[in-house]
Length: 116
Length: 109
Image 1 (cartoon, rainbow over the protein chains, first blue to last red):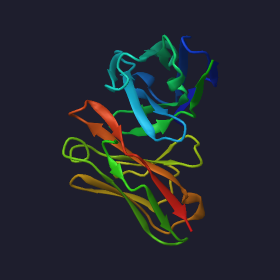
Image 2: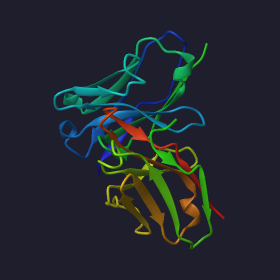
Image 3: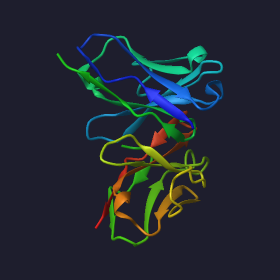
Image 4: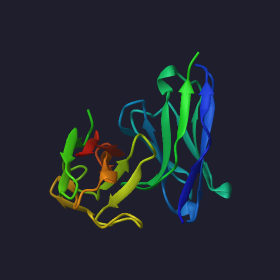
């Protein structure tokens, strides 16, 4: 069974850094693109970007380019989403998703709360 | 403003057939397969259709189609548990990004 399991909820202060994770199992992790989707409170889904763990080729949405970093460690089948300096507006649920043209498998979500 | 346009809300009664639409352009829906996702009470989304394929475990009352730059998700024999928000997405080659619709809230009366 294909599964994506994300790290737990985080509460951070503005200006702090953060790295959340998504571990894939049940498939060849290096053979599929995996990405991140943001959902702000009460809002819709927004595509942030994707990475191909096989060669670390990474694509970002123009809206998120420079705001976050997507990476992957293929030795442990894990993808990451990181921020160097969080803002209150980064408060949202973040989903990892096996995808390129569309998503065929979702993680359970990681809630990130940024508050002073 | 989402790149893909979906109805804000749709409603139907138990047993009815409903169709949700997702409209784009030649850069996205006109060129690539579309995924459809169900999100119940702000839980994690679940893929209910990708391309013309039904994921394992999804009831066959769900079906998908595409005509030109509009994709559709049809639910035949609507059930109370189908009440959810539904989103569509596909790749957009002019944006070099995956794009989502704004979502449709489906209410089962």
